[in-house]
Image 1 (cartoon, one colour):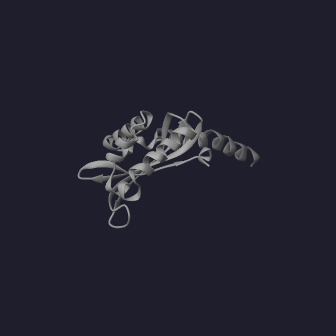
Image 2 (cartoon, one colour):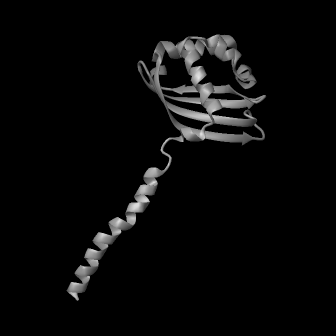
Image 3 (tube, helix red, strand yellow):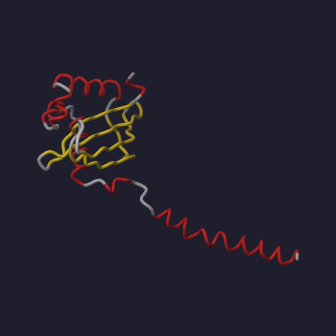
Length: 154
């Protein structure tokens, strides 16, 4: 009886790792970066806004933003926020997408086709969470909200 039990144990020790190998391979082949789900037009808007921030073109960011953005904040307040970010965090060094969500909202503050993109962003003086909310208006993706979360801003 012990012999059969040992044989069964050896079989399990040999078969189980082999049986789990395909599952591990499938998990490894899964999407690890949500970027591929984000349309290039949306990625281009985030890149453009990033360039405008780097070049301190804050008026341009405001002027090219959605009506929603302009309802929430004045040009002066928008510029003040970006200047404060630059003063406290410094220039953006890198940005890594951590979350992307596409929504179709029938009501609320963000009515319509919306993309919410969250990044782990490295600035000169530290890291922060950066969230872009883009809304589609007249076939174009425009900035509706922008949020940076960092202890350096306190």
